[in-house]
Image (cartoon, rainbow, N blue to C red; front, side, top):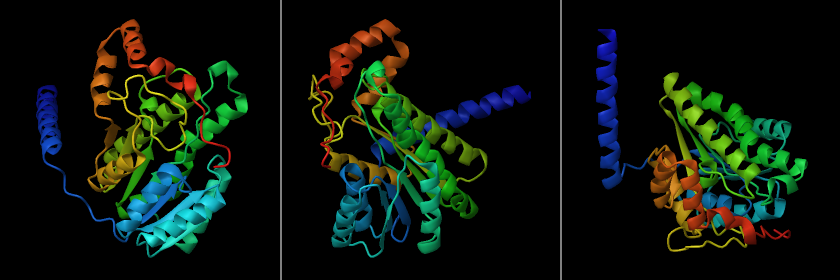
Length: 305
């Protein structure tokens, strides 16, 4: 009898949540107010991190900006203030170093207070084939793109759990959902970030901390300079994304407590195909879309940046 009742419960809840997601697909969810929230953004000195900083600034959030690039960070602070931020705090932090993260996190808690929205955005890409990628770069990629999420979350999650209020935001990539050539270390790091975020979401629900939300963002390549030189085979199908558009969608997803955001939307369909097609057929399909040779023309962000 318990098995029968448990099965009915699962079927009923699954149907309900499926219908709920379909409704939210048509009717936008209510957006929460982030004014007064303390938002920490890693990798805020340029690119996507800077855009997110400005978006949250306009919404009245208190900003805590981290980066290793001091000059870029100063510029982001200036722009954030121009965009209405009343409280902006910047810190130099090397997100590839666990002790540096813990040290700066303690400083933030002393000087600013508890962080209520943590945006793990800092990331790097090497763009080399596996055997041509030096061990040091592989380690660096994993440290910045994956392990940093562990340490920042360990630093700021306890306060969120204590108040049952907070939000963990993971800026990942579609490379965290599908492997690609010349991106072995990057894909591994982003798969790790996606898995960690999903585990945190499940763990918070299991522990009854439903006030601590998670949002994982998986965009295709963005025109931020990080993937400079990359050319898409069919740009009308898989375009190089406008970072301004992705930033707006990301902030909206956070405000609507959306667990997963994948851009462009066609990726959802491609992921379904990947899950049901034989591996060889998936490779043929990826080749057709140009994904297998996406990084052949990769140059990366200019050194001066």
